[in-house]
Image (cartoon, rainbow, N blue to C red; front, side):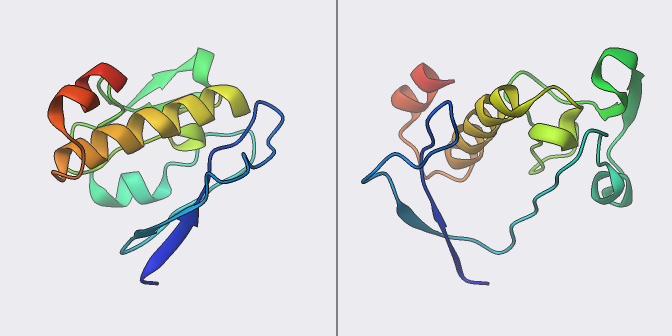
Length: 114
């Protein structure tokens, strides 16, 4: 995989017309279901804690969704089970933080978004 097409979604999950854009990627991981999906994080050595409110074990992460392992961010089921709207917000937060860390997002604007 060399790139992914991403787009903004409405609260109903519909693509916002004109928001599509292509970004370079090395890998894309997705998950689904109503249980935290932590296998890849466990293999990477990410510490986890039991949080009953999130459906079981969840990876330790900071307010920008970065785990305690540098360069690994989580969102959605990988951070615990919460729902689609929360997952979308987490995805935006993790994506913004990742872009900032990679030098792809101007610092003042990234800080405002975060």
